[in-house]
Length: 190
Image (cartoon, rainbow, N blue to C red; front, top):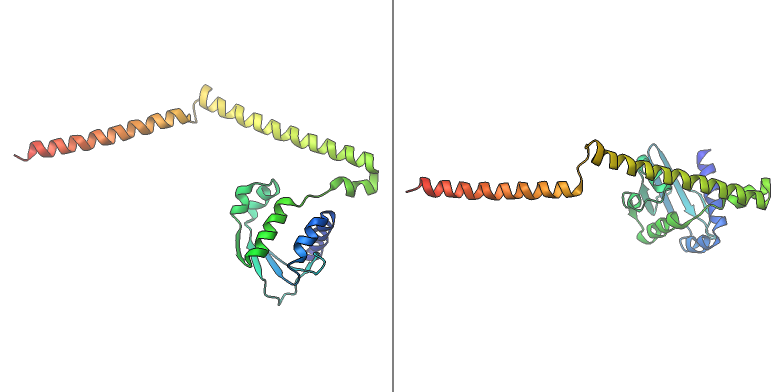
């Protein structure tokens, strides 16, 4: 049931991004398996660029193992999260999958317009995007305020300048101690 829903959603997203169908059609007949604990999904690319759920006995041409903790970061388009995905198999297919994962966009206004009309859908999507931007800015401001408080008002976090000064002092102390040891050895040996 869940596999059918994921295929339907993925094909809907691909249909909204027609350019992606041409790119994916080059891999017709290839199968990609995604392991997101505890789930495993396998999709086979169709000749038109759409995908279908792969048969359970099909050997995948490529495999991606995604830790569940990476999902929120991937949703936020965090490039470092993409680097943490474990992958194996057909390199060209994996490159295309990663390219599509970064560039496919859901046209929410298009889907919403079926129920509300074009103008209302655009305004709803715009309002949601503005709210998301506001939440993001608030989170950044809060993080900056907390960092400033913990470095200036109630020092809990060291400033980079303080850390580099401390490191220089430790290096100087280490060098001085090494010189002192050498001097003691020279004085103790007649």
